[in-house]
Length: 181
Image 1 (tube, rainbow, N blue to C red):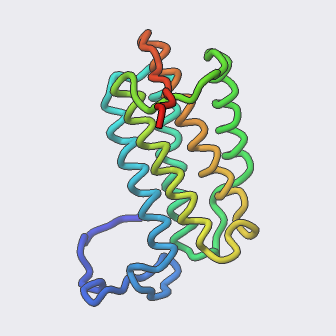
Image 2: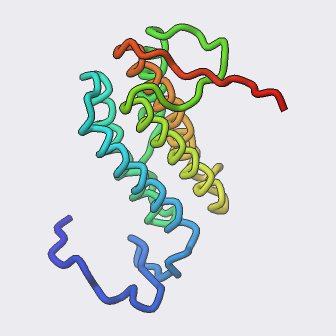
């Protein structure tokens, strides 16, 4: 796809076109969902500029490309499937691999530690929001189950990556402390 013109003037009245040509209001549920995916991809682009492990950089580069497919599937309003079980399986493999380097959690952790981990936690929370946005699209859980699974697993992966980055930097994870009420 070649983009030669950034503005089209079609959105000036609050509408836009999906990839399938359907005109919808800019607050259409699919627009929210792929807006959240775009935000997540932008955050991951920023995370890539930080002092990450080579493993995390490699994973994020792959994720960013797949997120374009997620956005594409959402922008076709259910008419095209671009996320498949192999994408979900890759995420699960990375989770298992990275989690194998981590101690089991005995307490809840608070997002933070290193700058890299903190940014990965921000990405994780945006992935959760994207998942909730996708859930609002009628029949998506059943018609596009792999996309839904992918975004769900992605937030889990970002969580273990945050923990992994703290471990590599020898930074203790901030633990939640129940405050007396």
